[in-house]
Image (cartoon, rainbow, N blue to C red; front, side):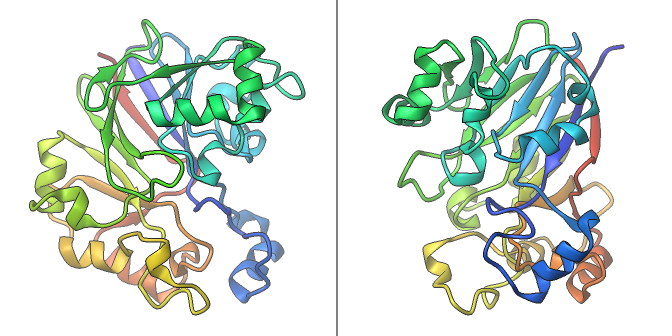
Length: 294
């Protein structure tokens, strides 16, 4: 075989799409057409050895496993989970691993020290640890680790600034012999993340071939009833203005973590047409990438 396969299991911001409590046209349209639904961001990875690895622990996990055919019909236990940070849609499915649902044992949960500390302090999540359901394993920032022995790929956790009221935040670089995929659903600003360089150069320095990056909002005018400074994300408009049109040797960049208000959720919107005309993509659930094993 010699392959590692990555499947996109979710592309929405933490609330999913449609979002609970939203009665606007954007969400009503999805309630009428279930095929437009989006789940909170997540990836499923099938290792070279047949092992299965989940990125983020969403409450929509059951539906996401149906997308992930490598795992959905399997009776085998998950091999590992990696969590970027502790905001809602990334951790709210942890309880599904327990005896009330999946009944897993000794599941490796790769995360930062601050996420592990939060698990320890949260009574519900700590009970999973005490019952032997999960085994938090703390990564070293910027150092590659193998989620399970023989899986054929490594993950490197790269610190990126994002609201840290609960934990710090990391992008995950999934590394193989021939290609690397960057998963970065959340960060505050490009200026902080890039540290003075450009998006293209930053991705080249990381040897990224495929980049799934923060596309939460289209622009700063999107939320009329909220102070967007309280929920900082670089907008897709800013990201594409920094990038310009796609060049022949560019990284495959796809936007993820779309808020329900983002017009890119509608593939027929003017914004979707504009994005495509510049050569950039929105990731869709079921998108799959094959990497050669290490």
